[in-house]
Length: 175
Image (cartoon, rainbow, N blue to C red):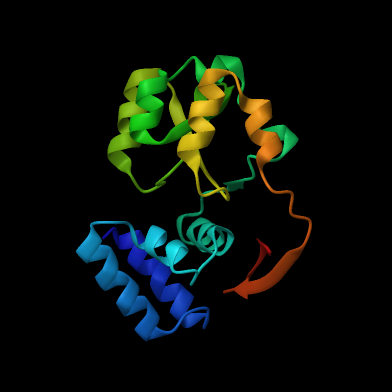
């Protein structure tokens, strides 16, 4: 299990979003099935992708991107910086290019091996973001196959938010 996943799990318990027993059980299931804690919590409906992503963003200081948002359409030149098979393997979706950097949605913002590989491959620094949509692989496939607008249109539109405090920061969680 990744250290950051353990930290996010502990924060879920601290914020009384799940119990200590639920976290321990989910961790045991994750270990037994060789799956990520995040995925186990999703499958058991203990945590929504929105809750997990919000806390992960808080813990890692990595911004959240909503792929259903008009401003999150991957730019063609950004997609060209990473080959499709590499994007699938590393679970990254290039979104835009800036001066000396590529902004990418990443599955795990703490995976320094993947970020280093992307740096070496693109010749640019990587500005990671994380997505509130749990299925990044589908987004990657659709972006590289040219079916992005069809994919984006299939994402649920959510217009209500739950606000809660984490430390001194106010976070917003989509319901």
